[in-house]
Image (cartoon, rainbow, N blue to C red; front, side, top):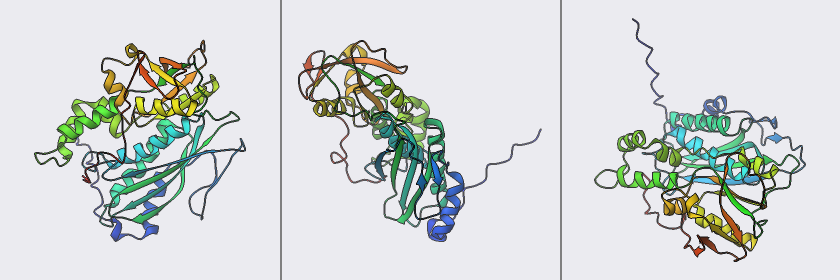
Length: 335
């Protein structure tokens, strides 16, 4: 019997040991190309095809402390989540994601294997969630806190964008994706993934992930239904958005934009109704469809659009909106 070869140890080099060019040389081979690119990384800007004549663009940031804790997330998790959250915003417009531009700022003491792991997560996230989408450029800088800033592009493929403002009374409210798992996963991490002093602990978080893979995975490495965005557009969705801050608060945004109300049927929200309504970062797609529409695969009915402008109800009763707010509740810890 022969022993399997041991996995190579991570490099001990840090960003301070390498030039920007040397860091980029480590990153670029790990990143996926884009099917839409005419010119990729290496020049001052990338060049992409835009066969529709229009493109969807969105941007998002992840900052160590308010958005993630290094003790809980692996570098691969960070890259995957940075891709997933931006791909979901593109999909929510009914577009197909085509390319990402990624900027990373990190302390000079950051080991190079952390940056390589982020690149691997970006690659794997794009390949799994939006095949054909790739990273076509970006930037590197130094910062006290590890920061990822991603800009995503998408192709409408000749369709009109699906806005938040198109819902009409009588439409069906439907969702593709999970509800409440990511928020519950974060709650578990803050309760059970910390030491006696409340400091995030990597070993405790890893053990917690083994016991609760669905919830912790949904928080640290979400898998939004990216391909359901274009499918919803093709099925005639009247309005749509990415559920990033919680079902109730994001439904309220759609309702206000459309000048309508949303009435959820509690029997469709699972056994933990408040968890489903208040948990953030699931990155499902909330959409409305004309009454009688056959919902596309992956979507399930949650309720109906009403004429009560801006009001979110559950079983006809107004619901106090809650969910994730980046300006509320952060204690300043970085973890």
